[in-house]
Length: 117
Length: 114
Image (cartoon, rainbow over all chains, first blue to last red):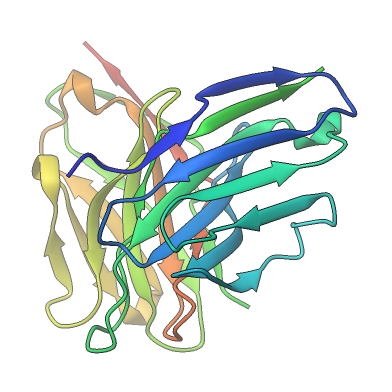
């Protein structure tokens, strides 16, 4: 078990550029979450997948944001036409959700720190 | 709506002293409760969780937390703090629905004095 991995760890971009982040979950996990964390704040939920289906999106996820999990394994988060306000740490988490269990426990990756100049 | 409040933004304790980090939640029923720790520039590591049953839960690194329904609290404690415990601590609540998403508090930064 290698844990949740994210790539890249750091990304610096200019305003207006597109960026894409990748998350590789723990291999047997069926759920994958994306959160955003700004300086001095706790993480805020963006979206999550169960297998390849995107089941919930936050209002924080504007039209410029899109997430995919095409084969139910890794996921990508793309931000189009980046703005300075998009600067944040983007965290990915995965979990194993079972019908017999009351809830799932999320395990987080190291995050991708985005800086928009 | 669900919410989590961590009243203390910053706490400083001496090494070897006891620690209590406060967490209050707002939720219509008994939620699922979590404490995570984040070291600078890193992701979040799960310390402990409460789903049901015994209201005193034990976690990793010598931490424990107690769920108090009457006070809507889930405070984190450690009897003797080590310098390596310096980090940011987040309390989170999960809904008793099937979405699984977590609502986090603002976090408490712990500084440990030698």
